[in-house]
Length: 544
Image (tube, one colour):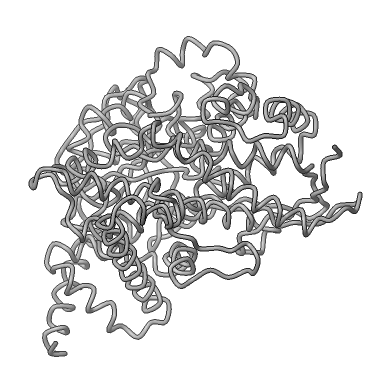
């Protein structure tokens, strides 16, 4: 490609970006009457505070200080709204969802890096993909995966047991590292029919390393999340990708290499599966996942689908990377959070151990048996309520709209606002953390970890609010047509892993400080200064 053409295209994109920036400071907006904290930076607005808070607590604090709708500033002064009001959330995620796409621009950075998957597509294409994928995540298929999950969790327990040994003093174990390895392998085998980890050494293959590196690398080049949607109005996806590859920036080039590796390995795995499917069920029985994995199920269904509903190879490749990225860090860090909480609460840990040990009686549990353990279910739900792995998700308004409110707010000018104007082009953040912990709905103890709240009727205010979440009046898995398609898959992973770990080991705190931080997903570190995802607990064998 001619360098001069790239230069001209880049200059055109830069001018467009500069106009969008200047517009934020010289043009007034209807959202300016919404209250919010002063912007700490004209360059990055509230972004650093929002995404570097401890475990997403900043979003909850904003709701406490300013109400259920808060005005924020983003990169280079861009106006944003942070929303926790249940009626407004219903409009965003369900009633008027078409007006609030995940990306109102032609495409965003995730479309460029991952391709056209459930995470990145909109409207008709998204509906067609969802129609094909919904049956793949059915409970019937999940029941068949329970033995796969138990096999992998059992290997994790053996590996941890080897490191712990028989010492009554136990051993310091990085439980976050082990949960990451476990969920990656569970996703690999159950979703792709592919093995990443032998649980002997500490390495995975190029695909696994790319998946692990994706979000840490993305956090180093997050500015592309602001630039690419704007550039997409004047440039095609392939041209922007070419420009990014040509920029001599180490982390940006690493990001593009990760994208290429994931796409190439996904393509190779799909081709291998197609060949196995053509050879029949006997061939699949000798593969990882034995043909029960989600990708094998999807490929079979896709072959039989009408031509107008079939997913293209490009869409299938994009689904693979998306399945892995969406499910790996969220579930592994949620599991880590449960173990951290139980290490601080030995009585609750022992209560859970008693329930799962009695139910297991030395054997693995079926899907239905796991589902019938009330305290295990309550522990998982309460942890996901109080500590959702993702504190907020974004939507962009594609046209001028108004958000209706369940509870009116007071504007900057003192007026009572029963609805909030949302001009086209405004980013709206769904405040998952604040919605899940709203004291007006959950009660005065909303900020406390109390699993027993799930063993009795919900407060009337919560029932009346009709939170639009797909899971237990929570937004931890979002809601509406873009809710997490794999939330039952994630629940099963958590319950299988916890049922084995808690019945096999005792988890205790150390004197080392643990700090939860937020990027795309909340993650633990050992100390305020550390950026390494890690959580060390003292682990000992449970006496028989």
